[in-house]
Length: 202
Image 1 (cartoon, rainbow, N blue to C red):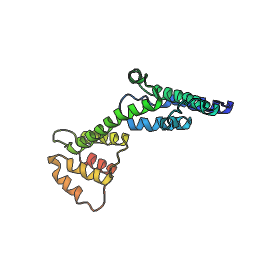
Image 2 (image 1 turned 90 degrees about the vertical axis):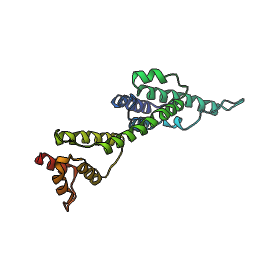
Image 3 (image 1 turned 60 degrees about the vertical axis):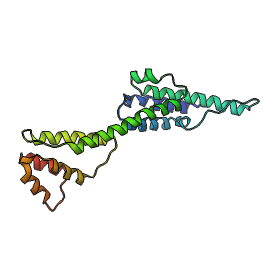
Image 4 (image 1 turned 135 degrees about the vertical axis):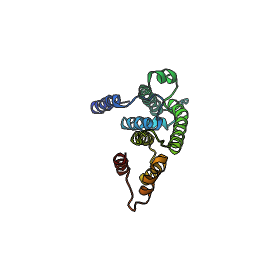
């Protein structure tokens, strides 16, 4: 495989940016996968994740042999970048996979399922959360904000007005009159405005 000095320098430059990616340690696989695929695509080596290795045949042409050698080299680079993106524990677990595609598919099968489970847990936790009397409402509001930030990490989008309405419903019993006044407001309330209302009222 022939690589010009310019191309080689570009690859080195792109590869050096790899250290800016967070190591995957088993959480939020989809976000890590998107970042990793972007890196591999930038390096022009992502295609081995979708392209089978050319088979060896008798009396094959030099061109076919070179194409297979090129694929092998690219696959080695691709696997190296994926492995380098794993935490030490996961590196030790997955380092013996034969091809980059096998490694990629194994990670996807294992951790995509866990991501789905995590999302279901987050939704259930949010839906079941209920504020209680005797504890700062603003502290409880911050707890809910942390949940919403986790939603963002998983690229889960929720309509702000639905979120606001849900939080109002979660207010403790002692706040029932305030809750009623918020629900009867004609204008829609943003999440930020709701936080201000709660802060002032408390």
